Amino acid sequence: MSAEISRRVLLARTTAVVGGTALASLVGTPLSASPAHATPSDDSDSAPVTTGRPSLNGWEMENSADDGGEVWTRPVLGTPLDGVQIRMGDVETVLVHVVQRFHYEVDQLRRGDVESWRSPSKVRKGLAESNLASGTAVQIRPGFYPSGQHGGFFPNQLVIVRDILADCEGVVRWGGDDKKPDEALFYIDVPPGDERLVRVANKIRRWVATPGEGAGAAVDPFQRKRRQAAEQLARQQS
Image 1 (cartoon, helix red, strand yellow):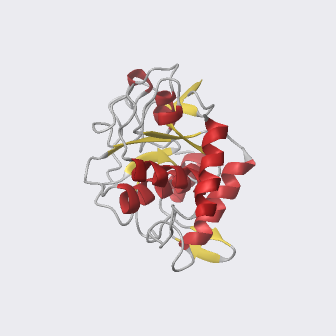
Image 2 (image 1 turned 90 degrees about the vertical axis):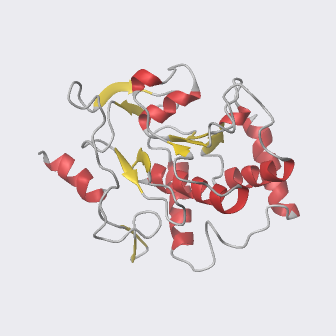
């Protein structure tokens, strides 16, 4: 095994350190934790992990998860989910935050309610769903919010969805705003190396390290200032 693969495996099992404070990767995962259900996909024996091809948002698609690449199954603490297969690092931090806030504030999730990494052969390359293949997207309760349809959320739920997006300062896009809507889909909307993603991920990590902040904290998405910020972002992303 190469030094690079060993580094990635180690990152999947260790903590992120922000400002000198050791944090469990993303949301308090213990040092001894390993990726949940770390079973290679069916494609892993016949193809290399990397593809050399980007998903719609510019991140490289991978042929398998939990197989030495950048996409691993990671826990979503505070939920009954078995984990999500997602790109490690800043992408993981941001998208897990989205899933957690959805669970706490929009509707409680059950096991199996979130779909994440998907094989490149099983996504439509020209649509935002291709971002699933790069580990930079999640679909939350896709059975409740079918692709191509609008109106799956109640108005008060939509206010919270918009507030979650505002938390992420535009680095996450909601599929409900796409030309071909997919209201279950949330995906990273900046390319690799974009400093905005780094900034938002570090902000979320600071929240995780601070009692009473972050996902599950008592916030009011209906507060005027928050509504204004969310509505402004919605206009920018529409």
